[in-house]
Length: 117
Image 1 (cartoon, rainbow, N blue to C red):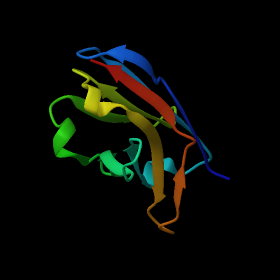
Image 2 (spheres, rainbow, N blue to C red):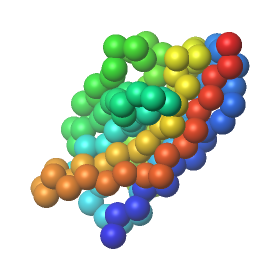
Image 3 (spheres, rainbow, N blue to C red):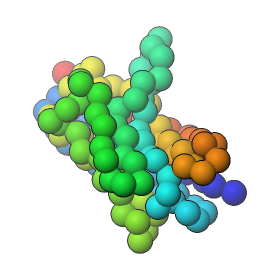
């Protein structure tokens, strides 16, 4: 059973930084595409950043140059370094993992990020 547990959210001021982490339990994550999504109140969930099994990264235009996604294969952990946070970044952030073989995807419970202006 795959489980994803996010941590690192909180309340910060505009311009501050936060680092989100997603601890994955199970096996085979090196072959997974993993990503961070976010959902603000009244809005649809959107992709923030994604990293493939080949370590190819994709970012939403709104976070390019400010956020960095990375993965620690030894610890089965996904990170999202968020710099120069803006009030528009306020949302619940979710960790996602997609099995490259079965295409089944998994979600964490989410962690709240609130940026005050």
